[in-house]
Image 1 (cartoon, rainbow, N blue to C red):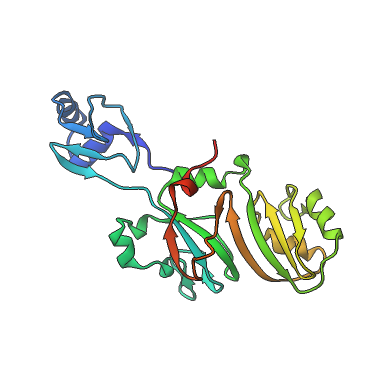
Image 2 (cartoon, rainbow, N blue to C red):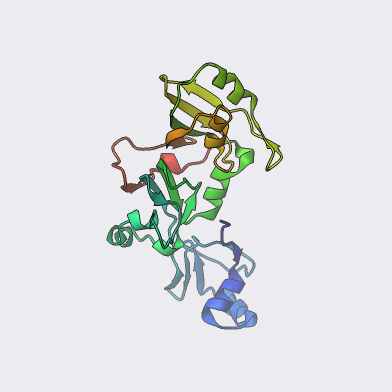
Length: 242
């Protein structure tokens, strides 16, 4: 989801239902404040988190929101669904209101399948989510995978080499696989191809029994966060790598 960026004069004209000429007069009289400062430039870039006031009255004072959810199995990564409970249903409206979070502005960062559990991120900051999910930034996603059949060392080399998917005509980037036990592995990848992990194990005819996302970049699922619960991210977790 893209950030809602634009020009100050167009925002004021739309919000106040006045002409651009009237906006210019308003700016010249120093009646407009943006982020605590008087502004006079009509073409000042603003976004959905710019705090904008006219004559002391707030026109926009949105705050960015960043949420970590411990997604349960059986919950869909969607805002609405007629058949299943959604991740939005896991959020408590009263707590969101207390923290000035508008639930309708939230979007999901990197969806998880219905039967996949673990770390799911939600935000209203389009620039942040785009940077986190952009392939060029090579943000690692770590999963714990439980398989139906025993694992062997052959998997490690095959995953590291990448796999060709004819349907999309692409070869996956190298994937790190660490075998924890006979049926459990940790998989680290930098992509999010359609059912990628399940399809890669499918090459060995080894069905995935359980899939759980542990982390996205430096954001690690809070071990104290029960399944189905959520919390706001810390400033350290929000900060993107340079």
